[in-house]
Amino acid sequence: MVETQRLICASAEVQEQGPGIGFPLPDEGKSRRSGFVVRYKGVIHGYVNRCAHVPVTLDWQEGDFFDLTRHYLICSTHGAQYLPETGRCVLGPCKGKSLQKLHMVERGGNIFLIESSTEESPL
Image 1 (tube, rainbow, N blue to C red):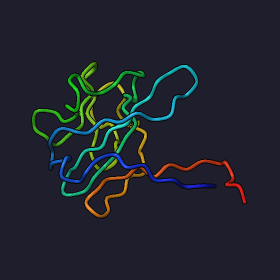
Image 2: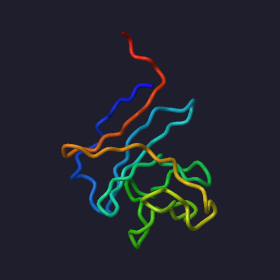
Image 3: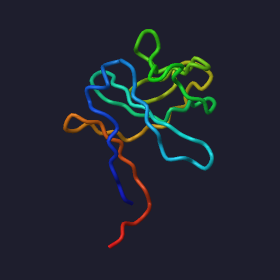
Image 4: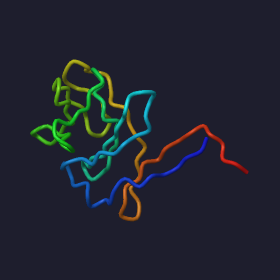
């Protein structure tokens, strides 16, 4: 398994319980995917931007992932609420399901997405 890291943004761009930063993910067949990163209680969290209920993006405006209390991630379509730390749905039509977590790392003033592939690197 080969791991690569992709720069997403500068750490300063992701403010505590503020707007998230979206980014493209590799396509799955014909569907285009995106991810996002937010900061909650000082820690960054990244997820695939797809509701666990139906495959729609969460944000109703670009980067707007938190509810009005700024304590839950919310699906703008159905109102499902997710814990920012785990992505687990605690309220709404997908209660008990979870967002797909992405492996994010904050290092040297930047935020990176760690991607794994099964491709072997050439010798």
